[in-house]
Length: 135
Image 1 (cartoon, rainbow, N blue to C red):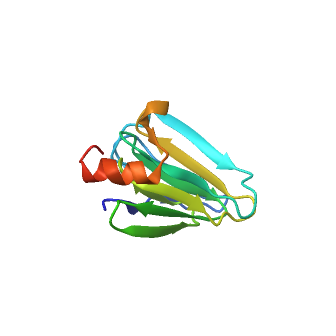
Image 2 (image 1 turned 135 degrees about the vertical axis):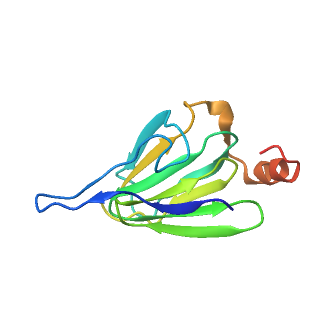
């Protein structure tokens, strides 16, 4: 599984700190889409799908949450709780997000524009596609 935590640049300042991400520098793709998750009710989860082509970079801008990734053989949990770390999620991995803290804010940067055909929502279908090398 090529997913990994990437430490982002951190510029410390008495007035407040700054971190950033740039295309093809801190993350291994050009950003085509940006969206964020917020006000996730306690006990709820997000995700529950895989992408055929889209890669993502996920940052906890505020609060904390867990991202569980599955390649069809192995599951790994990544806990995100610092705004200067992000999780690189390559295409073809099943992903679930849960354990959101109060006021958690998840920023997600994608390598593709939104395309509903890129999503795989059925886990059994995901496993079948993985075993046939379709994703």
